[in-house]
Image (cartoon, rainbow, N blue to C red):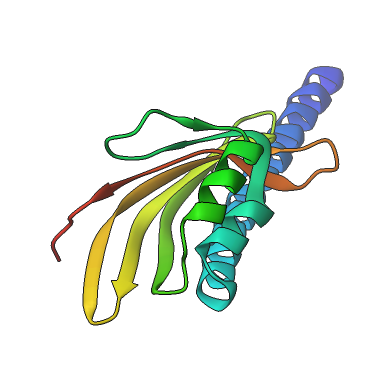
Length: 147
């Protein structure tokens, strides 16, 4: 009977520990998304995206085929000037896989161009790279939300 109780107790402790790690990872991912947005505000969207993108990431944009790979995104950003606007966002939620190496965030973005403000929603899929850093592997957004 004591062995059975110890096994159940051990299982419970491991289960609680894993759930706490998942919750900590969710909060970590939310903070990474916030840091990503802050970098976009401080140094521009192009700089921020190129610092947080995975080499094999894809961007999904309206009226466009997927833009695949860091090199293609870098090439696109070398043509698109981000000096005339500010893009920021706020994650509303995050979740992490049980393995702890894949997750997503979603929330609301704000694009300011002079006095015009556009708002929308976004979703970003994140993956831990081989050095343990979160990089986004998929990013997409939708225009036009109302408050």
